[in-house]
Length: 449
Image (cartoon, rainbow, N blue to C red; front, side, top):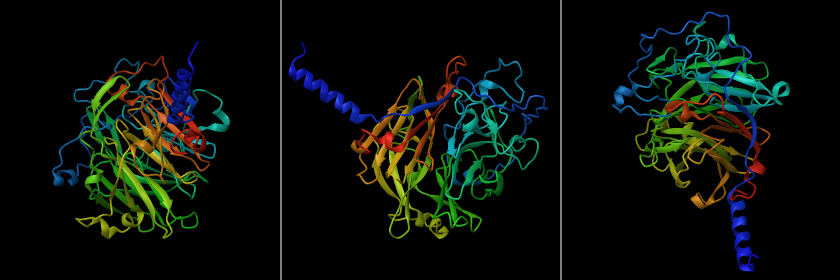
């Protein structure tokens, strides 16, 4: 019979476990391989010329003399992609379709499919939750339509999108990298561009081609955060765009239709945090500044912009008022404008993070823990104040995106990306999943309450 002291010890351990883990994430969808309502079957497939050079070579990187880096956007040198497909030039090759981003808005779940291989029918897609929400592996609809996703049909069409976001004015924003990231054959076939779509009408209302003087290629443009003071000031919007390759932060002003560049050491990757072990794969990435998110509004109207590199355990912050002044970008010394918050702890490298205004909690997609972490922004930024919402090395391999919708629901995409890059996905098992949880349930029983 268990002694009283042993019983008390067991209860304490159980309590500590419950305090360490939140209520977890709910699996909403899962796929062995992705599929579409319109695969493009029957249409002629015009793949790019394999010997074609990069269209926009640029000089931005070369002027800085920065060494080339190996990031999550790259394939290993000498990599040979799978070639055992019935048609390796067709418009749809199931194995090559790896989803990256997820954003929910009023019954539509936007899912991105960057063109890192051939055979991807549409890079920007959505799931109709009313129609297909009860399916476990729903097909994707191209957004806003199939035609706009055909990059070879027109220079005005989409090439490759990584992640999306929705602002307070019901607009979908995203970066089209303009790049085909095929192994051993990367091609910049368009200028990278910022797109804005009116979600009330599903019409593109703005496309801004990023000047070559800002950045030469779209290789490092994987996300953006939109800063709008209120839905009554929709034209006075700013986009904060991290560049994970060049370690720069770009700011776009919608009102001025201009863009400027911030450089800072805090945008670099941490050389002590680039060694990763995920999904049975061991590798090194040098991803710099990867994610930005906006904090609460202060009494003076300003908001903190939190940011981090993916190859890092550290978090940093800067006021949005600093970023919104183009003249500040030209300064060689930023003084104390950019500040170190601290470390989230060991093996807490994160792709995306998002701030929830109702709870004051920032949630992180953590790639080494294969899970979701949290920090309540009113608490000191210490490792002890970071909680674990969920962690599962079997089913949540590489959470590539995390967003919070207007109803306070967290959405997470996990896509087994390291296995896809360095090994081989098993098409007979589930490789891709979308998860959901309400912010209040997610922080429950963690230090983030």
